[in-house]
Length: 324
Figure (cartoon, rainbow, N blue to C red):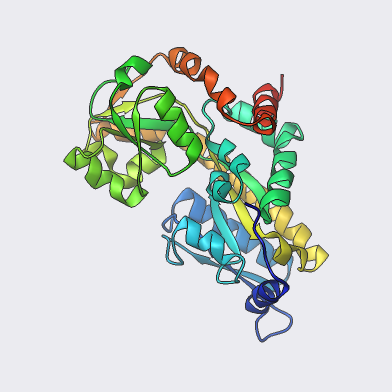
């Protein structure tokens, strides 16, 4: 479903961004991350660099902890100017086009090295972003590695067979539901705000997220095990309404692209440098780490590609072969 934006809506977005001082462009940036989190800090670095390079003529005002709404609400707000920038995973666009769901396709991005090959050393990442812009009407700038998604579970899991019948919380993305169904679990779409209580009360048996989210949401208080499946390496990006972005002065566009790329690269480096510390911190909190048979998970998921149309299969193969 391609996003349709009227001329009037685009004009409204521009009016929000250009304040009464004709020489100043003010942009509202939204993130679900709290102040001090890596991705909130990445947004701050972006804002500071853009302000400096434009001599204060472009000001990015950060909003944290979902103060401007949920991920879906802030993305929708890009068309109306209630937000101008959203820091979010690319997969959040899957409601606009299914191709965006590849951001959570299992074992698509193998590790940080492979992520850099896709996003920085080949043209695959930029061409993927360009294709998403064409299909959805959103401009994607930069790519920030979140680290692998791991499971928090109420029992040990060593092979896919151990998942049979388990209720696993998943994001609302179709590919996430398909993944856990193929692995034999019962996927339960649920808001992230409900996960802790649902784990604690046994409404679900497991959830999956990057380790920084395990710490932020204190999953270790609700269930004892962390299963290191490394099944998804998702990434963040800066989202803009493409029509609005194209209406900005060309020199401002170039600065936003350059500094957005740098800020997301900085965020990636921060996450990678912290993963060992996350493991140590979670161990100190009493979490027990289980290292399952990842090859068995990968083998079980091989037929998943056949569930999707040929154009998505082509992109999956391009991602998987990048750098080879």
